[in-house]
Length: 134
Length: 281
Image (tube, rainbow over all chains, first blue to last red; front, side, top):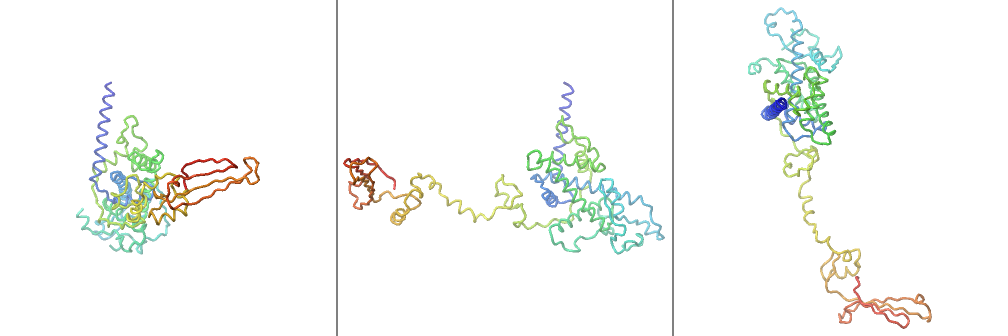
């Protein structure tokens, strides 16, 4: 009896938390615009009039991208810094999202990104990253 | 945020080539959003190929989540997805991307029937609570609502609720509203014998200009028609089936009392049978 009452209270709290979360989605503005998410959802046959659920999908996607990016950033920071002579440039260590870091980060999320070894991102590829033009 | 904006940024502007198709447009929009998210995590710049890859993966993520949620809703005999479908889809994705949404294997408590028990949803709720809000760089231009785009927000208020939103919008009301209002239901409630299929077309045509009415309704006053059915056995002494029957039909326009009813006169040898009744013409 006592246990049932406790679970009932817990359920009530959980319901309140869920309602609060859904209400907070109304005020939260995800980085990915609603219209864009709606377009992608409609392409996959998803149909929902509730803007909160569209925002929930947007938030989930945003979290996914942010997690991937922060993982790639950790990879980028963990790499040994290139030897540079200029002190000023060393201090201003550039944080560039590169294909290497991204593929390493994405591998942890079950996405295998493979790109050719000789793939040239830009004309400056192959040069020392520290000597690149800003 | 302000400091970051003032510092040297080298995120590529996606507007270097103007998008031509819808796919290009959505791709460039997604790229802006993805680069904003990357910026918020601390990146200062990105290779274009890496950014493009991450953008594509974002689009794939969105579409796979939407596909999962819609398949869950279809499995439950629904066309519109709800929160349960999305959470189920998130759980499935969490299983494959175990790092992003930990706790994907712990399905939400079925006994309590509460979705917030799902670790995935709790993580998202924490994300919403604690992550800084980064609005999209620019307000999106209002897309042109032409016929090809299924959803027409302007007409949504006019449309009835049971029409799904993905259907193309209704045509202009002037195209069909006239025809709908012109249908007079009372015309369908005539008796069958008064309809066109039964009524003699010729007589109808001749009446129609006189009475000024059409559509199978006969005028009240009309010329009388008399039938005279005569059976004459010229050979004589034969059986009842031996004679031939002639039906004479004439129309008397004088409107006399005698012609009030249609008379059928049958003459079989010496006997006359009179039967009077109204015959529909």
